[in-house]
Every structure is written in structure tokens, then in C-alpha cells.
Image (cartoon, rainbow, N blue to C red; front, top):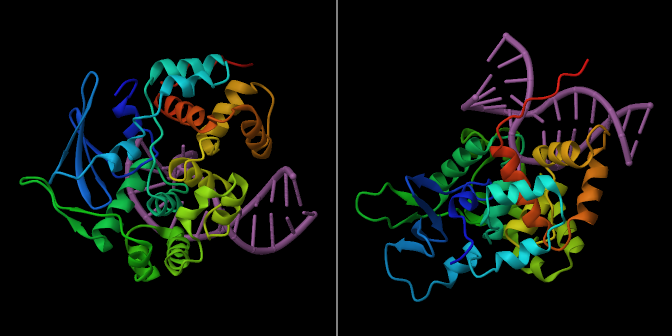
Length: 282
DNA sequence: ATCCAGGGGGGCT
DNA sequence: AGCCCCCATGGA
């Protein structure tokens, strides 16, 4: 692989089930345990048994995407240029739609560390145990919508989901019933797919855009969360207050067909940026 | 102790 | 449309 920054990609808040051990990353994809290690021009993958082929992994990692082509479509902006320089090789993953949806329903007003924690508890409580190599800790697959729908709201609250518990439960029920055919949404126009996602409880514009971008392949989707709001406000409209609505509309029109990649570079860079000294204002 | 976290929903004006 | 508050929990 070329132009692939595995650390930035797995640590940029788009997926919540990877853990780092030194230079290696361990996670669960579908029902497989995987360890990934990045070398100069390769990503080395270890599984518990030899797979037929590796497309499930290359698709997830999006390692066949030519990053230079993507970045060539970015708008010219000094802060974005800094983000690209700082984390060159950051990629968007292509996640399972249900796992992505459920994870982001659980994400609202939670820190990334806490999202990982509650997702881990959900998997251990109702996912399927998967094979791990000798000496590795036990691991579980992400539970299907049907597995989640079989739980009670009290079960979910005990995992620390708080007010998100009824949202996740109802979303799981609808998805397991087939009321929202997630995988088929990628064939629709972006706005139709977004509207369908926003029918689900606990799913507004931001979470819908996360699923469109991280799971359904809509590279132009641009989730605007608190970090992106501050970044756009501070770096694109310094000194002039903009409403959330205005910023969403701006992002929609200004960042182009690869806006989702732009967003991920800005998000990760903003989150890892050392706080700059503010000018003192009288 | 106080604030805030990859928001969303509902009510009010 | 914009603004308000509430929702539950834990880490900094």
C-alpha cells in the first residue's frame, strides 16, 4: 500500500473497536479477529485462520483508493493544508452499516473513549464470541440488530447508554424488522438515503451523515459535530458568528465530492492540535 | 466542583 | 427558522 497512515486512520474517531499495542492494532471485523501492523509499503494482517481472499479487509481499509486523486480534489485552504501535512495517509474506512449506525447513535455527547467503552460492553453482552489466538484476550463480534433488539431498555442502560438506550433499542427493532434496509441505502441518491436514516430515533443530520460517509460510501457527506463547528467558525469565518445551519450549508456547497475526506482530516487534526495561544483581547 | 463530551427531540416564540 | 432545555454518565 502507498499513502496509508494506519495509526491516523484507526485513531481518528470513525471506528470504535480498535485497540493499539505498540505499533500493532487489534480489532474485530465481522466475525474475524484481526491484527494489523504497518510497514514501509505494506499493511501486514494476521488472522486466526487463513481466509479465502482478503477483499473483506481491503474493502474495509479502502487501501485501493488512490489518495493523491482524492486530495487533489480538496479546496485550497491553509488550515486544511496543515491537516493534510500533519496526518498524510489518513483514510476513510468502509464499515458495516449497522455497526456504524448503532455506534454513532451511542456517540451523542460522549467522549470517544466512552463510546469505545459502551460499544465494548454491548459486544460482550450480546455479540458472538470469536476465535482469538492463544494468549489473546477473549473477543466478541458486534451484535446484529436482532441481537440488540432482544435486549431490554434496562439492559442497555446498565451498559451506560443513558438517554441513548431507547434510541438504540428502537433503531435495532426497526432495522431487524427490515423497516430500514441499511445496505440498500447506498444505491439511493444521498438526500434520499439521509432522509431514510433520519427517520430512525436518535438519528439527526449529523449521525446520518456519519453513516452515509463511514459505511455507505457517500464521500461527499460532511458530518458537522461540535469540533467541525468550531473549526469552520474559527478557520473559515473568524470573527463573524455563523449559525450551525449556515455552517452545514457552507460545508455542503464548498467541500466538493470528497468533502467527507476533508472533514476527516479537519476533525482529526483539530482534535490532535495543541491548543494555540489566543491573542489577548481588551 | 464544574464543565463538557463526534446530538437529538420537543416545545416555545 | 432560531432558541431553550432536557435527556444520563463519566472523564478531565
